[in-house]
Image 1 (cartoon, rainbow, N blue to C red):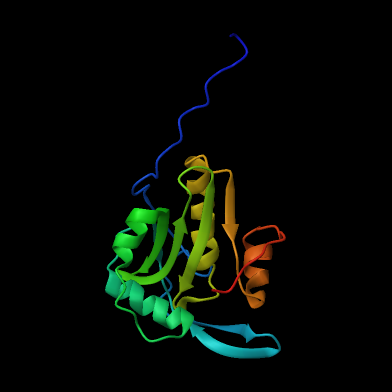
Image 2 (image 1 turned 90 degrees about the vertical axis):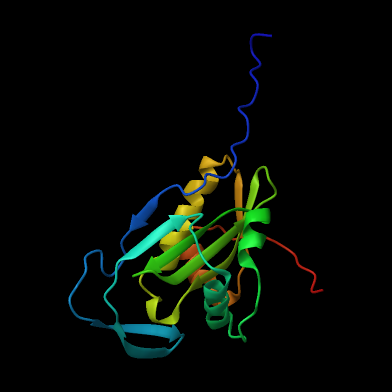
Length: 183
């Protein structure tokens, strides 16, 4: 049959697709902290020091469960778990992105998937003192690149309303109707 060609095989997750460096506010390594006005809550502005940094991003990067438990605890405001993240992501995820500054895990995002065309963005985390520098946005960009490379057709995310500007405006997700059942 001349008009039909077999679909190319699905790609498996690419292990360690290389690291990328840089940060929205400090692509170079400045010698001192800079002050930046941020609005962490609508209507409130605070002045905080932005620490100089170079961020290394790694798809399927190495991490220890204890350091991710600490970051997760800070990001979601709970006591640290003793969760085995490494086993979980290796079993269920297309991949994940680790963001590091001087070896310290300062950002993480997990990308579980259905093994075929749908990937899901969960556990997007950036350490408090590193927020508002574009680290979360860059991690999502890497996820989009890698999900495309794995031939996924859809990247899903759900989020609380206060994160709409991040996911819809900064990261380019489109709003869509969805439903949930609290269990």
